[in-house]
Length: 228
Image 1 (cartoon, helix red, strand yellow):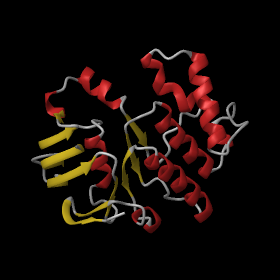
Image 2: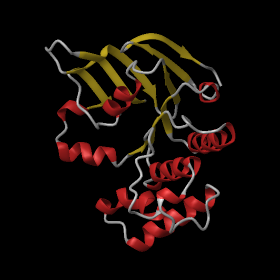
Image 3: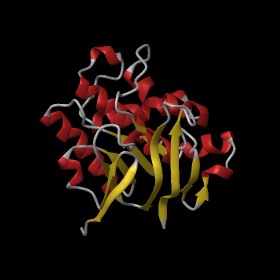
Image 4: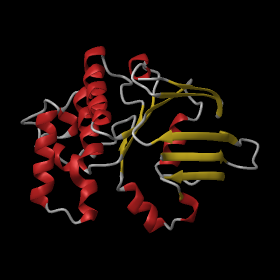
């Protein structure tokens, strides 16, 4: 079964103007359930846009995005919000809320699900302990290093026990040892059965992939399957 599939996917910005940007053009992709799929390519090639479309954070200009065989174009905004609860997102800039504590940053996406404050706190504590950040639950993001902020971002992505994790350059701007710690967390998530789709330039993440897509200027240049 496929976790994601795209068919002739296009995403244009400022369509029809002189400054039109074709972020993705006629892009076809298939992400098997349980795979570790990496999307690579130079900056500006469309990797971030692709993840936003797969995660139903944006709608395509044309073409289709399917999540577990369900065409997202046929979903209402409410239905898309429910689908996103089955996904975990790791953003390139961490996207932590500076006024919330670490544990609140990890678990605020769980509030709409009706999960109690006590359960949310317990989940955060367990994840922080697992990620080597015990005792940091009351800190603010500004009190953390860049690597610690990224670990909090990974914890937030996993707090909802998602089926799929979408990660945009999760090791960018991290030193080697901190990047290795984040990679180990992603590798563990994959070993636990989650589907990962990761945009990256990091060769260490590419070495873990079961499928690698290479983009250039919004178009697919190469697909490589890796037997493991």
